[in-house]
Amino acid sequence: MCGVFGAVVPSGSGTQAAAIASLGLFALQHRGQESAGVAVSDGEQLMLYKDLGMISSVLDERRIPSFRGDLAIAHCRYSTTGSTVWENAQPTFRLGPRRALAIGHNGNLVNTRELLGQLSGGRGRLPASTDTELLTALLADEPATDTVDALVRVLPRVHGAFTLVVLDERRVIGVRDPFGFRPLVLVRLPAAPGGPDDGLWDGDDATAGWCLSSETAALDIVGAEFVRDVEPGEIVVLERGHAPRSVRFADATPALCVFELIYFARPDTYMEGRNLYEARRRMGLQLAIEHPADTDMVMPVPDTGAPAAAGFAEGSGIPYREGLVRNRYTGRTFIQPSQTMRQRGVTIKLNPLREVVRGRRLTVVDDSIVRGTTTKQIVSLLRKAGATEVHLRISAPPIYHPCFYGIDTQIETELIAASHTEEEIRDFVGADSLGYLSIQGVLAALDLPYERFCFACFDGHYPEPVPYDVARRKFILEDEGAVAGRA
Ligand code: SF4
Image 1: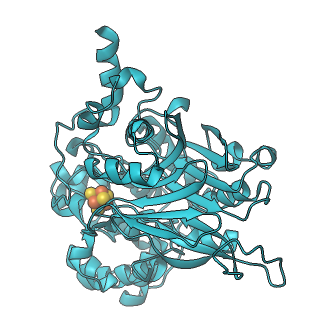
Image 2 (image 1 turned 180 degrees about the vertical axis):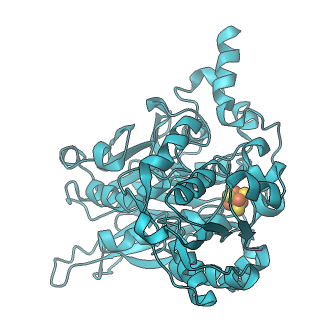
């Protein structure tokens, strides 16, 4: 999972595009915390800055003044292919024979090895080990003179999840793969009332610019208005002087990641016409119907469990209280990449409210159990703080299968539900009872059909087949590089 943002503003706006893209990205920090970067174009040349670290430290206000240009893309990374090293930060950049390109990618390709075989010069030409770097090289090499034509030629050969923001000298281009695994919205920057009309948008004097964003939660911070989702299989071209242009490179077969709605995306984001706070509250209501609990209070695992906990409390009639305080200045446990960091993470970021939990029977609502280690530590924290019973309720079904489309759950052995029964999981985490929301319960809460979503990590029905052995998938290009190095 990563965050992407793109912005096109009227010519002569100085560093406004970079400032808007960086600000928009700031609202997407939850989507990736390993690195951040921005690329700008002044119409002739691309400039790129990226580094490891949080957005606020990489794209701080001292750096923005040097990013002059009216077109910008920005990216924050959570790695799914390639290690967390500077070279793998995005946007990528490549100067090809026909074009300069920068790309920000959310998702994960599933035919990386096959695509590598199509790159003239092979692995040795890639300065980094991400699938995005490979895709950028293929697009930069493509002989079509126009970037959009190059995308239309190359993308049908690319499989897996790819939501892209692409920058060339003259355009910002948004792309969603035919399944639309990861979200992307087109938004409009309204002109300031009484502001100058520069007539740059096909005579539309009400619009001061166009943006692309992973989530609608970034709209308010940049003062933008939602226009529409970028459709699966669609390319949206943003160019100064023109209204957004739509080009299809494939038929849409929608399979949006349902986990975006359950957990990943911000609760103030809208997806599929649903506000995600409301959707999650309704998941909590469903959970209370499917797995009632006889306890003294309902509490969330903060922050992401809060909407479902509110719904559970509402549905069960049990009082809602907060029993854990979260340190807001640490990252999400799940998206930190190493097990050691994850284990440290939970005690760094959560502290029990002893006065609230002591002597009480708790219903604790969380949005998922992945490896089980974090949940075990939370149950232990609450018991040490004096809870007499801990009943876990999870507002998602058990995760039985790995994700190949942009979430770093690589292999079944990392997933506790893949190798343990629910009773064994309850025993492992130390809870008095455990209940997961069913797939039908998720759909009832969303009031949307199964066919619109990917549920593969819950039911194993992968919309896009994974065509090779996945054991070392994350480091596939590093392995290929080692092979090339030995040759
Ligand atoms: Fe989302 Fe799971 Fe599908 Fe991955 S496998 S895209 S996490 S629903």
